[in-house]
Amino acid sequence: MKTVDLTKMSDSELLAREVEFRSELQAGRLRWRLGQFKQTAEFKRLRQEIARIKTQLSKLRREVENKNESAG
Image 1 (cartoon, rainbow, N blue to C red):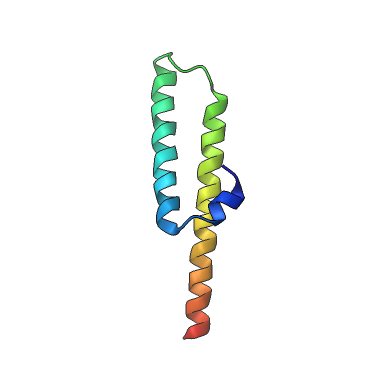
Image 2: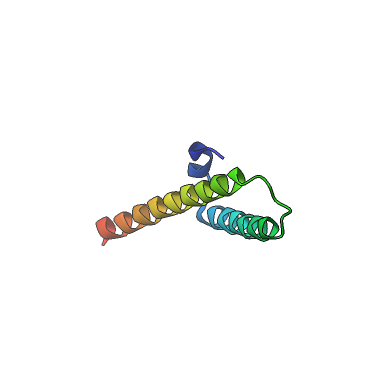
């Protein structure tokens, strides 16, 4: 997923995607421990996606805080 796509998403959509990626990561780790998962590069990709989503959520929250400070 590209950063451009993330900027178009709402707060709730971003949170849903974060939960989705976290569950994929957890399931992948379990399968890796059981010896069924060989694509370890997928872990890196999922962690990066989660980081991108968290960064975008942080930006959105800062924008809301800045609007509240300037309005009040």
